[in-house]
Structures are given as structure tokens and as C-alpha cells.
Amino acid sequence: MFACPAPSAWATSLPAECAISTATTTQPHGAGSLMSRGYDLRLVGEHAHQELQAGDIIVSGNGLDAGSLQDLEDAASLVMVASLSGHHSDHCPNAYFLQAVAPVLDGVQSGKSYDLVWDNGVMSTGTVHLSFRRAHLRLTGGSTPDAPAVMTLETQGVNINGSKNHLLEATMPQQASASASMPVSSMGPLAAAIVGHAAESVAVPVELTSVKAVRDTMQISGNGKATLTGNADASAGEGHIAVQHLDDIIATLRDSGQTKASAALVLAKLFGHRGTNGTSWDVNWDAGVLTVNHIPLPIH
Image (cartoon, rainbow, N blue to C red; front, side, top):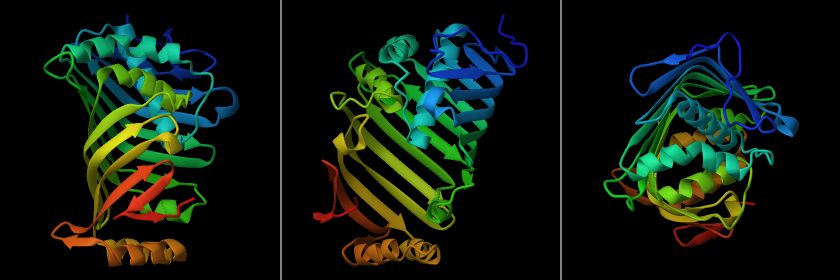
């Protein structure tokens, strides 16, 4: 009942005016788990140049049937496309996300866990291709219904090509990880806001337990708290960021012709805190203004 002829789209709640997903094959992968090979998700309409492909996707969830697992696969892939590309679609309605993630939210409230792994993925935006060897998303419920959900995301083997932004190519983290907690009831609305409905009325409190990004010798880590919306300028947050081998980052920026950015980091180094974890800063983002060590920075 799980096998699909190649290639064919399965019948899920994914709206046709939002995106189209196909897979070469879809079959069980152990108890409560599904594997899709040759997965492809493409936005439609004005964002038809946005596409996510994966050699394999494995989605696992306590108590979910095949249809709910496929819905989770599509919904999570849509959020990934929007997060990586920064593009939104007005044709992915809130009702879709509320329907697709409802079984997951119910499970999280009872302490269940859900897992998605994308292997050999490529996110395409026209001629720009962001590839990764693996992306692993895990969602875990708390011990009580009112406890926040814990979300972890890890990416490995990240690379970008076809971009005219040499700075992006030179500084893109090769691997990154993040761990955060948030109210279960806010997850569906936040996903909808990220993908297509950037309503400032959606405000999700998130605690960032840890964030880490690594490229060669360069490493950035941090933690903090944030209130997320679908609109970056309407979001707010505060936290602590530490950078190891800051001089390597400055040299990379300078070699990429980013003289203003490298000069800004030279100044940042002067008023940064130095310790065993490198150079660190206290940061605050509110109303579109970034403040570092209590100094507002003009970033627009």
C-alpha cells in the first residue's frame, strides 16, 4: 500500500496551488516509519523556481499512519524551502498547516517524538543550488501536556554553488546545529507564518538552548531567547554569541572583497569579550535594530 510508481504524486492534503510533491518510491521503514526515495517538492505559481530534492527522506512518528507521515514530510519540507530560500507563497493557507501537523501536535502534548532525515538534499533557487549531505530534524514532547516541545536541527556537508554572492559562498557553514524549545500550540501557526503568511500577530516565544555553525576553522556558537513571527523585522530576541578564530573570518571577508564587513568585525573585536571560547558579544534584536554590547548597529 506504500509503494508508488515512478514518478507519481501521492494524494495528501498538500494544496495543489501551493506546491507539488513526488517520490520515486515510498515504503515502510520499520515500525512507525516511512522512507521516500527520489523525493521532489516544487512550489507553484510565482515561486515555481523554488525546489527541494532529496535522495531519501525518512520520517518517523509514534502513532502516525502512512498518510499522516506523508503529510508531515511535505509540511516540514515546505518549511525548509521557505527557511532556506527566504521566499514565501500566499497560496499555502494556514488551514493546511493546522491540518497537516494536528496529529503531531497531539502526540507532542503526550510526550511523543517525531523524526525527519533528509539525505543528499539540494535546495534550488533558479541557478543557485544549496546542497547538504544530511539534515536531521527531531521534535520531542515534554513530560506534561503544558511542557514546551523541544526541536533540534542538524545539518552536515552543506555547500552552495551558482551564487553571485561570493561572501555567501565563502562563509556558508559546512555544518550547523540548533536546539530550541517552544509552546506546542504555537508550532502550527509559526510554520504557516514562515511559509506564506507573515502575520505579526503570530508571536512565538522560543528559548534557544544552543546554536552552532562551523566552517573550516571558523566557529560561531550562541544561545538566548526570541519571539518569532513570520516577519523578521517584527521578531525580537536577545542572547549571547561567541566566535572562535575571528581573525580567520575577518581574513575571509577581506579576501572576498567585503571591506566594510571585515572592518566592522575588526571594530567588533575591539569591544568584544575575550575568553576561552574566543570572542563573544551580548546581542539584542528588536524592531529591526541590532544592538551588540549595548551599541546599536546600522545594518539596513
